[in-house]
Image 1 (cartoon, rainbow, N blue to C red):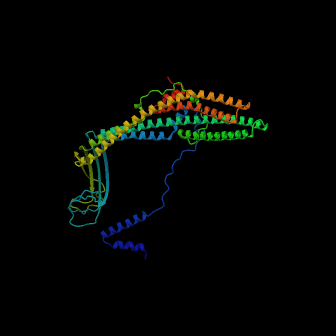
Image 2 (tube, one colour):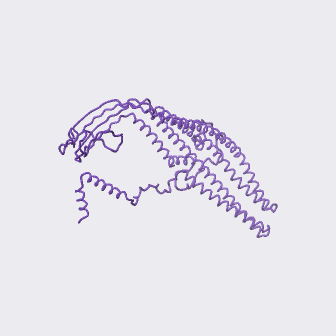
Image 3 (cartoon, rainbow, N blue to C red):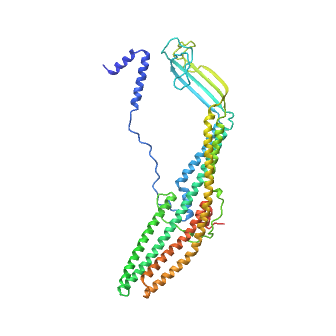
Length: 496
């Protein structure tokens, strides 16, 4: 005998309640089989950025163009921009609370009607049964149907919806301030790494000039030693100094490569920047003093101020959350049933479509009596968070003032150093020339020339870095004030 037909026959011989329980058991068994562990399906592939093109940062040449490129290309700006747009959408979403609700419903049912007397607590599992109480149990089923529409509107809310809209506005202001702060950080980081790359180039240039001087001098020393006009130790010392100069050049080249990589990272590209133009960075700025600005306009203060306002807005929402809710409601409904008024079964097609319509209109007032016990600790917690945000705002403002004083002190020191490095460089050049002349005339040792060479190389580096440090100090002052435009105007020669 076929096992399937035997099982089906056994099911037919069961009473109807048992047939139903048997069918439920088969359904549960099928669900258990379908929930057996399977191999995980491959997830969606992440779209990675396209391979970098060699010309993607070709437009980066001087500092202003590097800053402009970073502001167009850096990924963190797209993140902040997307979050700002999401916060702006939150305002529109909060405003939808003023709109009425209009819900539609349609049900098509096949069911029995074994109704009993008694009470059932509110729940979402056992469906309700309408009609008279049945004297006996019956497993006969008939069609039932229902259709309805419900219009709900809250005419007034004691300021709860407006408080939620204001909260969304504060979140949007906070996201907008975060976007401005991100733009400031991206621009300042690009400018700082550009200046660092220029400083690395100048160090490499000084190291190359030092190596060239040592190559010329070592050649001269070898000639003098071969003619026995100088002791052999001079040749050995010259070779050691020449090797040291080569090592310094290699190290300076590595620093340049790292600086170019860091600049590419600050610009948001995936390859090092090939070439940069220092522009006016190698000259002293026309105005070496940092301008006075309004620290209160800094984006970080705007962001923290928005955080304080957001905390206050959340307190306003909590203050109004415990008020009564008023709902104006209008309902239209229509039902159909395959059972008669006394519970008797009707024709087979009865109940497929609704045929008994009703309407209702009214005003619903709901008051959450226990809500105050829940809201009270939340209010206290939000008040404490508001005080914390205000204290953080005060701390940020005090820190900005101290940073402003620090960068002004650094700018003054950098200015005074930049005034003295030309004197140091000129003296080092004269010292090198005289030491070389003394050695060529046999009046001085090689150690005197070596010391003069090192002094000259250090003087060349210090003279170039001194002016760059002054530009760095002006950039740091602009960053502390929250506005890089005066610094960029100074670089471009557009300052008024």
